[in-house]
Image (cartoon, rainbow, N blue to C red; front, side):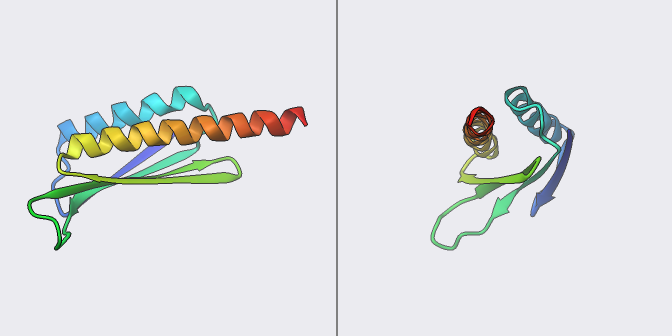
Length: 104
């Protein structure tokens, strides 16, 4: 599995890169068939929100399927954690669906 990380509107430090890689690699244990993962993190500008709002979005390429997840938070690390949690749930659902299709 390859993980492509892109920062938008902010600098991608080695610490942030390592944190994202660790979190996204932990999703791989739930589904072995992950081919590619594109992660975009950055500083969003929402005019109706005050302060800095960070976003994290992930596009995961599975065999015959694509899963997209996006979350925003006031803390970058919280946004990454929320994406990881939601992505894990989506991957597990997809895995269960594939299992049911094979049984039928």
